[in-house]
Length: 172
Image (cartoon, rainbow, N blue to C red; front, top):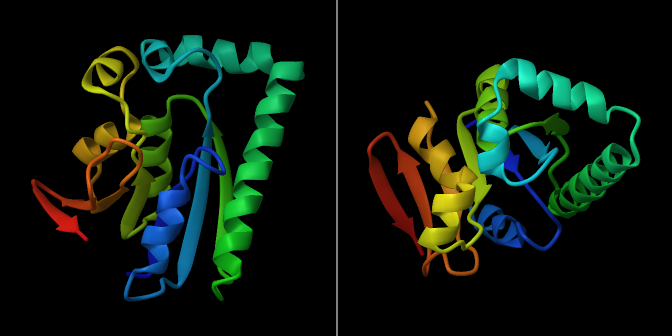
């Protein structure tokens, strides 16, 4: 695989991704680190917005303190992971910041960048929490046209999962 997309949400929340990535057998030629800024509420709220409503929301947040804080967090998170991956000898790392619904933006960037694999973390939400707020990793896994590697997190099971089409493989 030549190009991998790694979606990260926070310094602590996605640490399982680093561990998983460092245990891969091969090093990709290129890595795209993606952070999706969640503009308002939870992912279910933003997923119900039409494109026009999302555009209006993005426009109304420009220049606000809230947007500045989102941008600062995104830069901090991406810098953290870029440094961690760089310490492992990887140099072709591109960082991308998007706004909106996490799973939709992850899938868009994966298609635009023509990646061979997407790596996402699992939040460890309960079924009830996922029902109300959604789960980006599950949505990415269901809709991606390329393999998706889901890193375990709190409450996500004992191992990571590689989803390729309809098949899942446990990675221990």
